Amino acid sequence: METKATNIEWHEGHVSRGDREKLLGQRGATVWFTGLSASGKSTVAFTVEHALIERGQLAYVLDGDNIRHGLNRNLGFSAEDREENIRRIGEVTKLFADAGFVSMTSFISPYRADRDKARALHDEAGLPFIEVYVATSLEVCETRDPKGLYKKARAGEVKQFTGVSDPYEPPLNAELTIDAGEASPSDAAAMVLAHLEQCGIVSLAEENNVAGLNPDRAARSSSA
Image 1 (cartoon, helix red, strand yellow):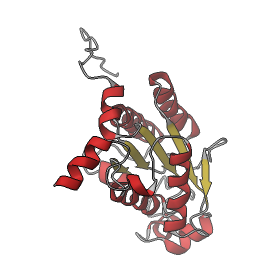
Image 2 (cartoon, helix red, strand yellow):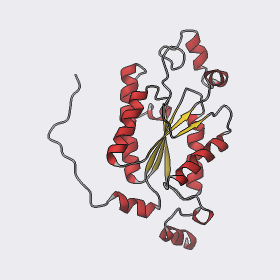
Image 3 (tube, helix red, strand yellow):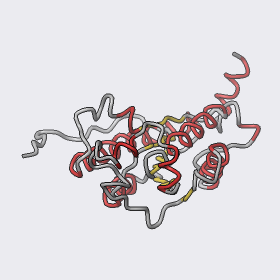
Image 4 (cartoon, helix red, strand yellow):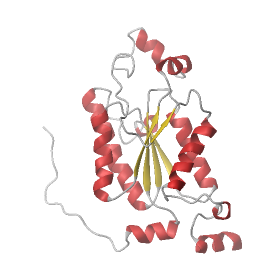
Protein backbone atom coordinates (compact mmCIF):
# COMPACT_ATOMS: atom_id res chain seq x y z
CA MET A 1 0.00 0.00 0.00
CA GLU A 2 1.30 3.45 -0.90
CA THR A 3 2.26 5.61 2.08
CA LYS A 4 1.21 9.23 1.71
CA ALA A 5 2.75 12.16 3.51
CA THR A 6 0.54 13.97 6.01
CA ASN A 7 0.72 17.28 7.89
CA ILE A 8 2.38 19.05 4.97
CA GLU A 9 1.64 22.33 3.24
CA TRP A 10 3.03 24.22 0.25
CA HIS A 11 5.34 27.11 1.15
CA GLU A 12 5.50 30.04 -1.22
CA GLY A 13 8.93 31.59 -1.73
CA HIS A 14 9.77 35.27 -2.05
CA VAL A 15 10.99 34.95 -5.65
CA SER A 16 8.45 34.59 -8.43
CA ARG A 17 8.80 32.54 -11.59
CA GLY A 18 8.78 35.82 -13.48
CA ASP A 19 11.76 37.04 -11.43
CA ARG A 20 13.75 33.95 -12.36
CA GLU A 21 12.79 34.17 -16.01
CA LYS A 22 13.81 37.84 -16.09
CA LEU A 23 17.17 36.96 -14.57
CA LEU A 24 17.79 34.15 -17.05
CA GLY A 25 16.31 35.86 -20.09
CA GLN A 26 14.19 32.84 -21.03
CA ARG A 27 11.01 30.97 -20.14
CA GLY A 28 11.19 27.74 -18.24
CA ALA A 29 9.87 24.80 -20.25
CA THR A 30 10.03 21.04 -20.60
CA VAL A 31 10.89 19.40 -23.91
CA TRP A 32 9.80 15.77 -23.61
CA PHE A 33 11.57 13.46 -26.08
CA THR A 34 9.84 10.10 -26.48
CA GLY A 35 10.53 7.19 -28.80
CA LEU A 36 11.95 3.69 -29.01
CA SER A 37 15.30 2.66 -27.60
CA ALA A 38 18.09 3.74 -30.01
CA SER A 39 15.74 6.15 -31.80
CA GLY A 40 18.15 9.02 -31.19
CA LYS A 41 16.35 10.76 -28.31
CA SER A 42 19.43 11.31 -26.15
CA THR A 43 21.63 12.34 -29.06
CA VAL A 44 19.18 15.01 -30.18
CA ALA A 45 18.46 16.18 -26.63
CA PHE A 46 22.15 16.62 -25.79
CA THR A 47 22.72 18.37 -29.11
CA VAL A 48 19.95 20.84 -28.30
CA GLU A 49 21.33 21.35 -24.79
CA HIS A 50 24.80 22.11 -26.15
CA ALA A 51 23.42 24.54 -28.72
CA LEU A 52 21.38 26.39 -26.09
CA ILE A 53 24.28 26.68 -23.66
CA GLU A 54 26.50 27.95 -26.48
CA ARG A 55 23.91 30.69 -27.02
CA GLY A 56 23.76 31.70 -23.37
CA GLN A 57 20.54 29.87 -22.50
CA LEU A 58 20.20 27.65 -19.42
CA ALA A 59 19.34 24.06 -20.36
CA TYR A 60 19.69 20.59 -18.88
CA VAL A 61 19.01 17.03 -20.07
CA LEU A 62 17.39 14.42 -17.85
CA ASP A 63 18.41 11.16 -19.53
CA GLY A 64 16.61 7.90 -18.83
CA ASP A 65 19.71 5.80 -18.16
CA ASN A 66 21.32 8.53 -16.07
CA ILE A 67 18.22 8.93 -13.89
CA ARG A 68 18.12 5.19 -13.26
CA HIS A 69 21.63 5.44 -11.79
CA GLY A 70 20.27 7.59 -8.97
CA LEU A 71 16.76 8.91 -8.44
CA ASN A 72 15.02 5.91 -10.03
CA ARG A 73 17.56 3.16 -9.40
CA ASN A 74 15.00 1.25 -7.33
CA LEU A 75 12.65 0.86 -10.33
CA GLY A 76 12.50 -1.95 -12.86
CA PHE A 77 10.68 -2.15 -16.18
CA SER A 78 7.27 -3.50 -15.26
CA ALA A 79 4.28 -1.41 -16.32
CA GLU A 80 3.93 -0.20 -12.73
CA ASP A 81 7.59 0.76 -12.42
CA ARG A 82 7.55 2.50 -15.79
CA GLU A 83 4.54 4.51 -14.64
CA GLU A 84 6.32 5.54 -11.44
CA ASN A 85 9.49 6.31 -13.40
CA ILE A 86 7.63 8.79 -15.58
CA ARG A 87 5.59 10.19 -12.68
CA ARG A 88 8.78 11.12 -10.83
CA ILE A 89 10.35 12.65 -13.92
CA GLY A 90 7.19 14.63 -14.64
CA GLU A 91 7.44 16.16 -11.17
CA VAL A 92 11.18 16.85 -11.49
CA THR A 93 10.86 18.50 -14.90
CA LYS A 94 8.04 20.66 -13.59
CA LEU A 95 10.38 21.92 -10.87
CA PHE A 96 13.17 22.52 -13.39
CA ALA A 97 10.81 24.44 -15.65
CA ASP A 98 9.52 26.49 -12.72
CA ALA A 99 13.16 27.33 -11.91
CA GLY A 100 13.55 28.72 -15.42
CA PHE A 101 15.44 25.89 -17.08
CA VAL A 102 14.73 24.55 -20.52
CA SER A 103 14.79 20.95 -19.37
CA MET A 104 14.81 18.07 -21.82
CA THR A 105 13.88 14.51 -21.03
CA SER A 106 15.11 11.49 -22.92
CA PHE A 107 12.87 8.61 -21.87
CA ILE A 108 11.19 5.92 -23.92
CA SER A 109 8.07 6.73 -21.87
CA PRO A 110 6.08 4.16 -23.85
CA TYR A 111 2.62 4.72 -22.41
CA ARG A 112 0.51 7.62 -23.65
CA ALA A 113 -1.36 7.99 -20.38
CA ASP A 114 1.86 8.50 -18.43
CA ARG A 115 3.07 11.19 -20.82
CA ASP A 116 -0.33 12.87 -20.66
CA LYS A 117 -0.08 13.00 -16.86
CA ALA A 118 3.31 14.72 -17.14
CA ARG A 119 1.79 17.22 -19.56
CA ALA A 120 -1.16 17.82 -17.20
CA LEU A 121 1.23 18.65 -14.35
CA HIS A 122 2.78 21.37 -16.48
CA ASP A 123 -0.57 22.62 -17.77
CA GLU A 124 -1.87 23.02 -14.23
CA ALA A 125 1.24 25.01 -13.30
CA GLY A 126 1.08 27.17 -16.44
CA LEU A 127 4.38 25.79 -17.76
CA PRO A 128 5.16 24.97 -21.41
CA PHE A 129 5.34 21.26 -22.22
CA ILE A 130 6.63 20.33 -25.67
CA GLU A 131 6.33 16.69 -26.69
CA VAL A 132 8.85 15.61 -29.32
CA TYR A 133 8.16 12.24 -30.88
CA VAL A 134 11.40 10.78 -32.21
CA ALA A 135 9.69 8.54 -34.72
CA THR A 136 12.67 6.50 -35.89
CA SER A 137 11.43 3.15 -37.20
CA LEU A 138 11.86 -0.07 -35.25
CA GLU A 139 13.93 -1.45 -38.14
CA VAL A 140 16.41 1.42 -37.94
CA CYS A 141 16.56 1.22 -34.14
CA GLU A 142 17.32 -2.48 -34.31
CA THR A 143 20.04 -1.87 -36.89
CA ARG A 144 21.68 0.63 -34.53
CA ASP A 145 21.20 -1.35 -31.29
CA PRO A 146 24.22 0.25 -29.51
CA LYS A 147 23.71 -1.78 -26.31
CA GLY A 148 22.76 -5.02 -28.03
CA LEU A 149 19.41 -4.96 -26.26
CA TYR A 150 17.22 -5.66 -29.28
CA LYS A 151 19.27 -8.73 -30.06
CA LYS A 152 18.91 -9.93 -26.47
CA ALA A 153 15.18 -9.13 -26.47
CA ARG A 154 14.65 -11.12 -29.67
CA ALA A 155 16.50 -14.01 -28.03
CA GLY A 156 14.29 -13.77 -24.93
CA GLU A 157 17.18 -12.70 -22.73
CA VAL A 158 15.68 -9.28 -21.96
CA LYS A 159 12.06 -9.26 -20.86
CA GLN A 160 9.50 -6.43 -21.14
CA PHE A 161 11.47 -4.66 -23.87
CA THR A 162 9.58 -1.87 -25.62
CA GLY A 163 8.96 -2.51 -29.28
CA VAL A 164 9.63 -6.25 -29.00
CA SER A 165 7.80 -7.74 -25.99
CA ASP A 166 6.21 -4.57 -24.62
CA PRO A 167 4.11 -2.01 -26.52
CA TYR A 168 4.97 1.54 -27.48
CA GLU A 169 2.09 3.99 -27.83
CA PRO A 170 3.04 6.86 -30.18
CA PRO A 171 1.87 10.37 -29.33
CA LEU A 172 -1.34 11.45 -31.02
CA ASN A 173 -0.65 15.19 -31.00
CA ALA A 174 3.05 15.77 -30.42
CA GLU A 175 4.25 19.33 -30.94
CA LEU A 176 7.09 17.97 -33.06
CA THR A 177 7.69 14.68 -34.85
CA ILE A 178 11.23 13.91 -35.97
CA ASP A 179 12.52 10.85 -37.82
CA ALA A 180 16.08 10.62 -36.52
CA GLY A 181 16.69 7.83 -38.98
CA GLU A 182 16.40 10.40 -41.77
CA ALA A 183 17.46 13.64 -40.07
CA SER A 184 20.97 14.14 -38.70
CA PRO A 185 21.31 15.07 -35.01
CA SER A 186 22.16 18.65 -35.96
CA ASP A 187 19.18 18.94 -38.32
CA ALA A 188 16.86 17.42 -35.71
CA ALA A 189 18.21 19.78 -33.06
CA ALA A 190 17.65 22.72 -35.41
CA MET A 191 13.96 21.78 -35.65
CA VAL A 192 13.65 21.79 -31.86
CA LEU A 193 15.52 25.07 -31.50
CA ALA A 194 13.34 26.72 -34.14
CA HIS A 195 10.21 25.57 -32.28
CA LEU A 196 11.53 26.91 -28.95
CA GLU A 197 12.19 30.29 -30.54
CA GLN A 198 8.82 30.31 -32.29
CA CYS A 199 7.12 29.66 -28.94
CA GLY A 200 9.03 32.53 -27.33
CA ILE A 201 10.78 30.27 -24.84
CA VAL A 202 14.28 31.35 -25.89
CA SER A 203 15.77 33.90 -28.25
CA LEU A 204 18.44 32.57 -30.59
CA ALA A 205 19.15 35.84 -32.38
CA GLU A 206 22.83 36.35 -33.11
CA GLU A 207 23.12 39.36 -30.83
CA ASN A 208 21.76 37.30 -27.93
CA ASN A 209 24.11 34.35 -28.34
CA VAL A 210 26.34 35.30 -25.42
CA ALA A 211 23.79 36.03 -22.76
CA GLY A 212 20.31 35.13 -23.90
CA LEU A 213 17.78 37.91 -23.58
CA ASN A 214 19.10 39.65 -20.46
CA PRO A 215 21.20 42.79 -21.16
CA ASP A 216 22.61 42.78 -17.61
CA ARG A 217 24.07 39.33 -18.19
CA ALA A 218 25.48 40.49 -21.52
CA ALA A 219 27.16 43.43 -19.83
CA ARG A 220 28.68 41.22 -17.16
CA SER A 221 29.93 38.75 -19.79
CA SER A 222 31.54 41.44 -21.92
CA SER A 223 33.32 42.97 -18.92
CA ALA A 224 34.57 39.68 -17.50
